[in-house]
Image (tube, rainbow, N blue to C red; front, side):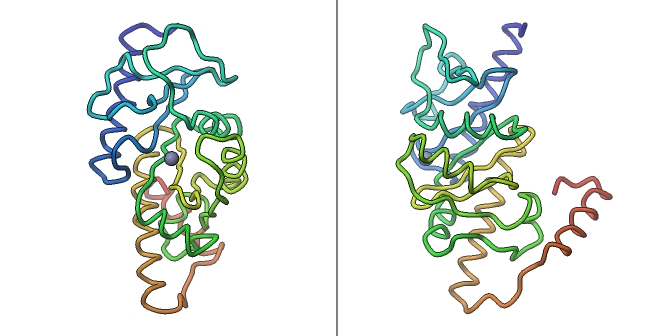
Length: 217
Ligand SMILES: [Zn+2]
């Protein structure tokens, strides 16, 4: 049983993450959403509430089975199906979905962000682009689930990006880093053909080196 103070701290962490999405320019307006897993339920940002107006009471609770407790103060994000699908199919503890510009742009010109920089290792390798489906739909959740298989991140065509991680800070940092990778990719594409990518062996060496140094990659 979680006490009220701890529950409030979890909800506050979701709010802080939402506000960092805005300050990092990962989203504009009320776009994007953030969730964390707490046992057999998730806490997720509400739909259509400006991030500057969030309070702990407005953070929504949804069971991993999709059930919603009675008496909630706000309606959960429209992307609940996407978040639940990722939690059901991974060991994710936090999921962040954003509409950042470079991620959207990159998803329009490729099916995959190749290993253009060693930092892509943190996502498990090249990051695939999920085909388009309407926001909030079960089809979108399914397409993203396929695209993210074996990875911890995916781009969503004509929509945005999604990253999951073992904690909220890592998921947010992952979004920022994937957005940066997409920006680098677009610059390289604009400058000329990409002639250098890292292969699986090199990424494995990167992972080993990061582990030795205690880096999260
Ligand atoms: Zn979205």
